[in-house]
Image 1 (cartoon, rainbow, N blue to C red):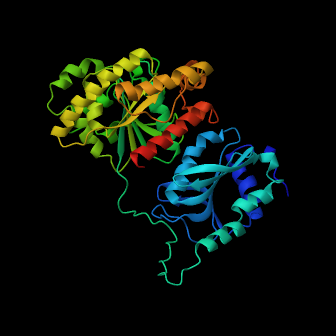
Image 2: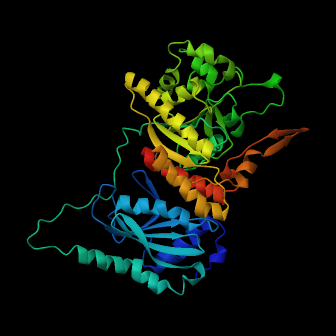
Length: 459
């Protein structure tokens, strides 16, 4: 039987037709030697092919002769997934990894703390080169390598057998992580980052809460919570983030949060309202107001894995509330001169907030990095100008940089402008980039951002 990549129209068919029906049997792995959807600690693997029933462990320092196999959609560029595979192999100390979207087939090998590609071919060539593939990651080949590595020294003490599974304690759930998305310069794609990062994290199985702390309520609109055409029917006015901040005893996060179906799985959103604009002076005079969001978030630590706070593009009270409540900070920036100059104000603002956090025994804000955002896709700009702008962030402003880059693409604007017709009305019905075009470059960029964020916050 030959493998035909043209029969793979989605990720599920790559899994079934390439890995299950063709590759694993031809490499000598029967049903008892491979496992699908394997969970090892916080790592989730598509396939794991074993030479024995000894599973790799995130606690192991000894390389394991087995193969991690990851399937991708036929339209996805595998380059976007090398970083994740590198994390899997280095964390688990697994020697080999396979990446394929059906059309492109790659084998990577762990060498020290990084992976290198050792074999690559087109999907149409897999059948012709199966013996070569077998000579690298076939079961018999890896069994022999494992045996040669484990021949005992007669004078050595036999090691204890490795655990079959990496058991993760279930009694202590991971701590909820709160991330503020902040820059005091407007127009840098803050809202787009908030909503699509939330969608990407949700797709990775995380329970996500988004809090809109900007009186412009862009995130509230972008997550599809504004369904009314006339202010008479405004159902957000009396239950939004302002109510949360005004009351110590009432309007809990759980009570005010609304389910948003702009992505699947859905997320929860605490909406904002234009009334925030008129309440800042009043809130500033309340002794408890700066801390109330942080306090009320403690009540939902059991319900969410990640909280993302959208902030106003200013140095105002609401931005301060967000930075007091967060654990981590992402600073989106288009890297243009005014946005860069604004980083000086951002650093000064963070310093002042950290001073207050120290007084109340909260840890300093951990800056995940400046996120290059709304970046032009012009080839010459990307080749010549962008590297210089990126370099300036660390050299001139002494701020860390995110590895991910979000480019300015039409798809991101279009998914936020989607509508639906109800009777004679055309209602705004925005969707995440994953619902709008899952195989787009923008979707891949946000998936990579989600992977990077989860790594950095320890989830």
